[in-house]
Image (cartoon, rainbow, N blue to C red; front, side):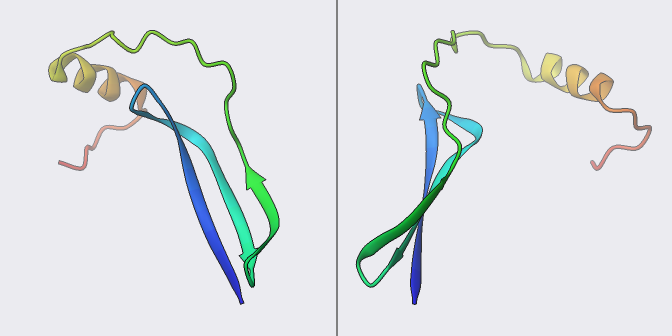
Length: 69
């Protein structure tokens, strides 16, 4: 009989990974709420890197010799 509502946190139109809330409702009443939220975010999101640079960073960040593509 429960209904669950999931809310995702965003900052300047960017998803904040690992930050969401779940509201558990039963018969129109909130029973419990759980999740994570990051307060007081002050991040400069204007930095951009090229696809090529992002790929090189990803390749060097993982200890793997075989890639999925």
